[in-house]
Length: 235
Image 1 (cartoon, one colour):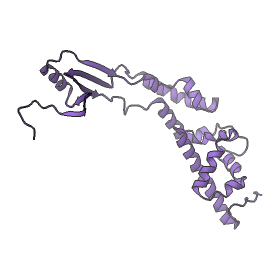
Image 2 (tube, rainbow, N blue to C red):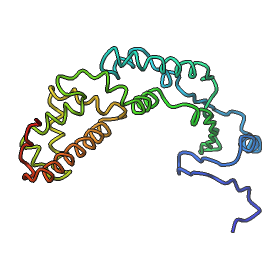
Image 3 (cartoon, rainbow, N blue to C red):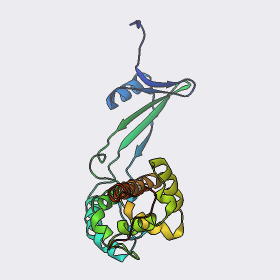
Image 4 (cartoon, helix red, strand yellow):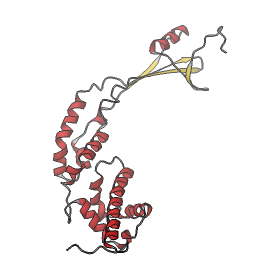
């Protein structure tokens, strides 16, 4: 139990030999400094970066496959940029203050997360928009055969005997990792437009591939042929 004869100050974090982070509100920190005759307080404001919430033409072009996709996304991008342009990025999102008490630095920080639930960062917002409009974007895909990129991928995979014998998720995942690394197959990344990173892109592709394989396996059962054999050509 704390002895009331001392001036106790609750600390959020103590780093021996370095600093003490105290709790309480802004005025409480200032009262602490006055009480200990601290005349100098160091401070630093933190801000949200406007650039992280702006979709430039170059950024958009790097995220799309062709002009048709860019033109489809452009109206939404302009609307998104108008919203971010109206935001006050001069409004701080955090204030850090510190002062020295003897050999110890007393640290205080307050947050003002005014943008956290207001709007997504440019990269995340565009990825979400493209994910929500995946079906429309697929229409702009340049493919060599088939009526859609999924048909193109299905035809390409099912002509490969090695793929047809990938009877479990793990073997298909390993197969697709090598398959997608080939330059000629990179066109199929269009099927993972809404992904935010390489892992998520491959996950989305593998989900489609598993669906293709299940359809193939069901066709084998229905036609009473061995799984792994090539499906007969449609008449």
